[in-house]
Image (cartoon, rainbow, N blue to C red; front, side, top):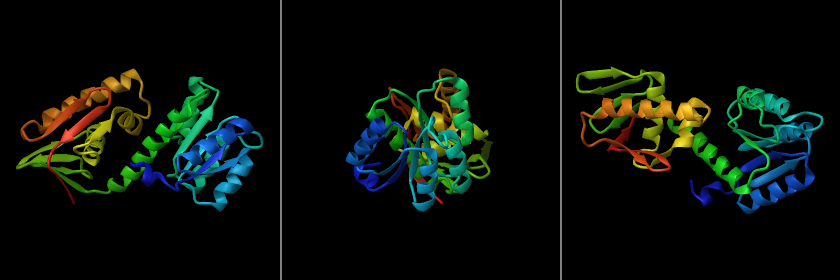
Length: 237
C-alpha cells in the first residue's frame, strides 16, 4: 500500500493525555491521515456517530468511558472497522480482553510513532485484502483452489484442506508473487504472533508445499526476516 493510497484516510484518535494526543494527531496528519482527536470515550463515541472513520486508535484508560467500553459501542455500530488500543497496561488479561472485544492490535506505552503507523498500515493492508476474500476460485498454476469448499484440486486429484491451511493459502494467493508478512499472517489467522503460533504456521506452510509440489512451477519461498512468497501463475474467478 503506497503512501499516496493512504492519503485522506480518516482516523478516530481517543487519548486523554493532552500532550500525547496532540503529538499523535500532528504526527498522523504529517503522514497524510485525517485524524480527529477526542479527550475521552464519550466524546469519541459522539464523533464516531457523526463521521465515517477508516480506523479507531483508542486509549484504554480514559474518563467518562474507557477504551474497552467505547470499542464495544463501536463494534455494535460497525463490526468491521479496525481498532487499535493504546495503553500502559501490559497484563495478559487486559490484552486478551481487548482482543475479545475485537481489537485488531494492542500497543503498550511507551511506543514509537513509527511503530504505530507501521501497525496501522499493516492492518489497513489486511482490511483491503478482505475485498479479495470473496474470490470463490483461485487458479494456482495447474491447481484449482475452491475457497468456499476448501478443496485444492489438480486434475482428478482433490485434497480437502483444513480451515487454517485454507486461510493461509488464501492469504498467500492474495499476496501472490509478493511477500506475505509473517506478522500479518499470524495476526490474521492466529490472532497472536507468539513463538508457538509462529512454529504452527511453519508447519502449515510445509503442508501447503507438499500439497502443491506436484506442479514444479509453484514455489512457496521463505523471505528471510519478512515472511513467505507464493510464486505461481495466478488467476481468479
